[in-house]
Length: 330
Image (cartoon, rainbow, N blue to C red; front, top):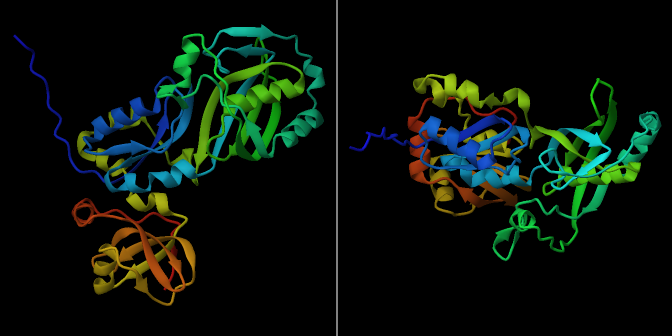
């Protein structure tokens, strides 16, 4: 006789959950766990974090998935522990050691580390690692790597906005560097650690990696998976932030009823607005996010719109304050 299975009653959830991703889970595994705990219908994440990595992972639900690209494109900040004097097959602590070096720790002066950091600050070129999710002929590169196949990879341009290196002096069986890096999308921090090791005259790999900020969202706002699991089901939706949490850097425009309806139909609106690339558009009555747009020559031009159903579901949900940081314009 088949054991009975509890069916989860899904519900429309619209907003953003800021997860402090634990080590050992892929981004998709973490997303599915939070989606199940919230009993949400539709969800997506905003860029992957390796299973070895922890930290800030915004998860989008319902209407918020329409704006997830903003976080995908945003600069990100990481703290990493770099193991100096050893390379691995994967570029991190999960791989097998390939080669080791004796490291002269006394040579790692503040001046030398600062000079190497400056060398890798600004626009740089990286060769994507074989152990990555980049696709070649429909297969991820890591699938080839696990089969012992190495493929040629084209270098890619990324930008390191800030980079600092410092010695870690705690007792341990290897020489370690603390690396703090703020970088553009598409940056492989593992590859950066390896290249820094080479520049210092030794091999290196990542020992640990933690994302501490992405697109203006930092760890102080994030919730752990354990905390969400311990939250009673009836209170879990209160951990979901409004959709416009992702739009904190957008200029805000509010439209009256007639113009709001026309805008939602995809029509441009005219007004006394200055040009702007990123605009969050709201209805006046009822107050609700309608979508995002840009302004050119006093025309408000729709980019991504919420559907009337999504707006209604958000309005019928538990009232929550709007995200802070949105600039009001008349």
